[in-house]
Amino acid sequence: MRNQNIDKSSASSRIIKIATSAIAIGLIMMLIAVATSLGLQQEIKKKIVAFSGELFIAPFENNNSKISTKPIQFSQLNQESWNTSTDIEHYQSVASKAALVKSKTDFEGLVVKGVGSDYRWENLNSYLVSGVYPDTGSKLNNEVLLSQTIADRLRVGIGHRITAYFQNESNTGTPNTRYFMVVGIYETGFPDFDTTYLFADIRHIQRINKWNSDEVGGFEVFLKQNVDLDQKTTQIYNQIPPYIDAVTVDKMFPSLFEWISLFDFNVLIILTLMILVGTLNMATALLVLILERSKMIGLLKAMGAKNSMIQSVFLWNSLYIIFKGLLTGNVIALIFLFGQQKFNFIQLDPTTYYVSDVPILLSFTNFLALNVGVVFICTLVLYIPSFIVTKIDPSKVMRIQ
Image (cartoon, rainbow, N blue to C red):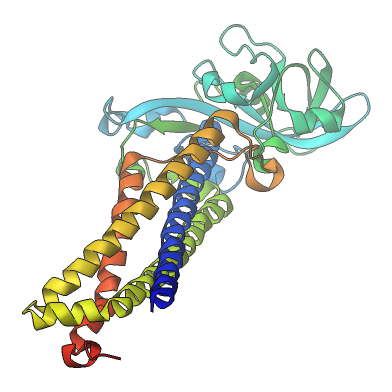
């Protein structure tokens, strides 16, 4: 009889350890999935916004391609009705034109993005590989910024000269030629940017297109934190002339944002699977505990204990196991996440994920929501197996074997 009790005790002990481990591992996976997914989304969106703004105001013709075909003036935008200091952080004028860029050995078809003195170069600080930014605030010069990808293809570096050929206004005859000097090299990890754009003074584009100094291709707008992008875009669109459009960043790069949205679906699958595994293991552990203590339950019933009271005893015991698993899972997950955030020991292929290491973003709200959610769902599900208590008959389980 003693050996049988020892076997039962060791069996329940093993099952409880498995249930505790399942809760811990499930929480670790959920915290890592949420933190890395949010981190990747934030970092990728940050890169896109740094290069294009949160919304772009330009004629409809310009929004349909990467090239500025028709100019606008800021005075045309009726800015008094929407450009408020509470919503708008910054706006900057840009104009783009296609060019064939040639070095001594190679050539590439690129888009020359013209920027002016109002351009916020500091947005690109984390992507500047070498050199400096072009000086677009003083006199017109030939300084340009290009990507590491383009520099490698053209086999040029800082201080090298390149030649850009622009199609003239009549689309016939000799192209417009500009000689540029490479003063800076950037790298974002985004093929959409790194294989496409070369930054130069906007006055080059204005002169080639025969625009006035106040005519530009469009305006990149940056909003302040916690400003609703869609709502602000709608407000601006309703205030500007009908031949001008206001486009949000997700509409400018739909494929990238569709790819980002897949992260949410993947995280949802992980959360569902981990909670399912955790609750099934806890339900099994609770059933084993109830069946092992069936005689105790029969005795309590014989003494007048109600089913609800006995159920609560086992549910509180289950909660203890859950909290033990949560504590272990939180400690391990937080150590891993803080370690990754500080040392970046997990690297990614930037050509696939657009970042070189796994970024981490986990707010206290998300952390608390995951823990509370696990406790709530597990407790709710455990009510089902706890009803087996009501089926135990004291006269049968207390019978001498």
